[in-house]
Amino acid sequence: MPGRATTLGNIVRNPTAVAGAAILAVVILSALLAPVLFPGDPLDIVTQPFLPPFANREYILGSDSLGRDVLAGIVHGARVSVLVGLASTAIGLLIGTAIGATAGYVGGRVDDALVRLTEIFQAFPPFLLVIVLVSIAEPSVATITMAIGTVSWTTIARIVRAEFRSMKRREFVVAAECLGYGNLRIIIHEILPNTLPPVIVTTSVMVASAILTESALAFLGLGDPNLVSWGSMIGSGRDQLRTAAYLVELPGTALVLSVLALNLLGDGLNDALNPRSRKR
Amino acid sequence: MPIEDHHTAPAGPVPPAPPHPPVPPLLDVRDLAIRFGAVEAVRGLSFSVTRGETLALVGESGCGKSATALSLLRLLPRGGEVSAGTIRFDGQDVHKLPDAALRRLRGGDISMIFQEPMSSLNPVLTIGTQIVEAIREHERLSRRSARRKAIELMDLVRIPEPHRRIDEYQHVLSGGMRQRVMIAIAVACQPRLLIADEPTTALDVTIQAQILELLDGLRRQLSMSLLLITHDLGVVADWADRVVVMYAGRVCEEARTELLFRDPRHPYTRGLMACSTRLGRSPHYRDGRLPEIAGSIASATGVAGCAFAARCPSAILTCRSQRPDARPIADTDHVLACPVFERATSDGGDVAFS
Image 1 (spheres, chains in turn cyan, green):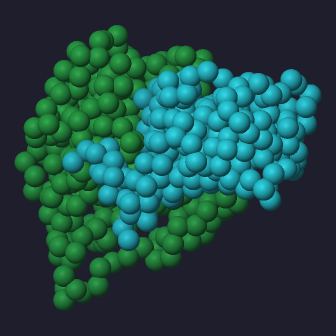
Image 2 (tube, rainbow over the protein chains, first blue to last red):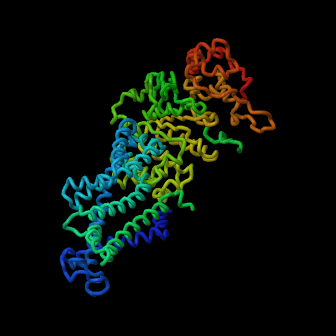
Image 3 (cartoon, rainbow over the protein chains, first blue to last red):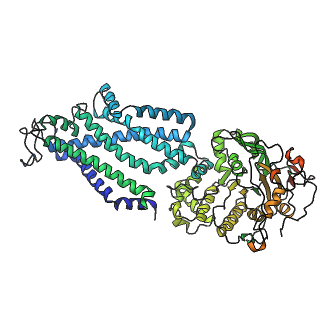
């Protein structure tokens, strides 16, 4: 049986991965369908303030201190979270893979230099660096995405470098060199696919931490002021924590579930893709 | 271990093509030296491979066979370098080739297969993809015609049901099948020289003979030369036209196969033959102890005389001080690096060879 089908089967048979994927599907679907489900700006004041959840048919999750629809905010907030999570991870993945692959494949001084660079980035607390980057630039989804991407590549770089180092002298790579394949082709076509399992697993955790970082920024008021985000909802709801706790609890739950889903998926993928744990 | 008797396989050693002195050899290695840091793995190694012949490079583990093979394609691992000598393929110096020409040489003119078919194939690509890639690297073919050619190649190396096998991954294939796939990839672009670095060491004995027969058949069919690197004298006796025996990175003896087995001169060659279980000697423990070469291979670095002197039963005083050069015995093509046995004819005493 071809290997791909077995891997897919392992994921499907894994309840953890399936649960994670299901929650994630709901989050992504609401992000995609937000303009259809809740047309108009979720920051518009639509009703009276402090409408409690499940009290009104039209605004199921109630309204906030200004009378904005909480459910619309959560659904639209998923857009920002998903967008920033995926895009910043893509950037981190690109930078990390390029640096890790070069360092691991070329070795020598290039490797030394790139490892030092990675260590310099790791020496900064990542969140602080994101705050600095975002405050230098205008806070917008694009700059936040770039900032998170710029601080999150180090883990990927280290993993990819380690994989490349161990693969470089493997016989199939020497055999590829023997056939006259160029370096770029060996890196991209021969070695990179072999490094994917740990990278995929790390990626799911990276998306989760990017979502958390974005929320934290928005909570501190450093998010995009024109877009609703789970973090900004929690931030603006915290003044009413005693009187209207749901304003913090509801977007908080959305955040917790998304991050949990990504971690579950990561664990599930790890089990499915890691041959050592597969045997259990 | 079962008695290994594959040398009863049908095809015997092939007589070499009649020599044409004006034609330069396909591969000509002169005074090759390879260093790994301070350690000299190979020194003063010279041999040549003529068109269409099978040359065997024989020696025990660590004597520099594989390093030599890798240096032919400039594939020595980091830290290893060719410190002296020349490698000429078809007249051009391999170590002076620009990168583009080197890549055309690799896979196009010289191909190589390795000892370990288990790890020589990329685990995440189907074998079809890997054969197709190899074909398209050196030939302008569409994906479809390359795939058709891949199936033909798989048929050529006698993989059953190539249509079905082509989309499988290497882990579902047996060791012998994987080595066949490796061979298919290696001969995809019709190289003129195929280097086989211990091609059968990792395979079981019944498969060994099949793979060697396949290599020999392909050599004739595709008119390649074959450089067979092995430690197995049984393999040498059956498949090689000429043999170079190496010890500690140097040539001890070189001769046509038939001559080497009839009249081995170097004490190391004789020792190897004496302790081979395959060459007509009964390996049963009741028939007495199998002879062995006393001692173990040591680094030849810093040794003044013959590297084998310490283990040599016939060593004389000068062996430890003067390094013997490999030179032809009385203008024949039998090359020997041992002054003690240069004149002596084989006494046959310690070699039982039918």
